[in-house]
Length: 78
Image (cartoon, rainbow, N blue to C red):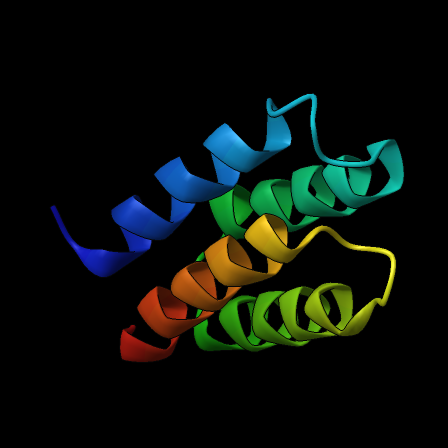
């Protein structure tokens, strides 16, 4: 499985996790749709920016931040 497929799978799991705040799940869903629609370099860069902004939010749970860093590292490989 390539890194983009792994990142998409992780994002789908996070989007369905009810322990994550709703606003974060909505941002994850938008990022997921962006990557599924077109996985060009521009979309990946935008997704990376969105995920990094989400991880900087002080209201996000620590476990979400850790998983976001995993997704970001997978997308940076692409």
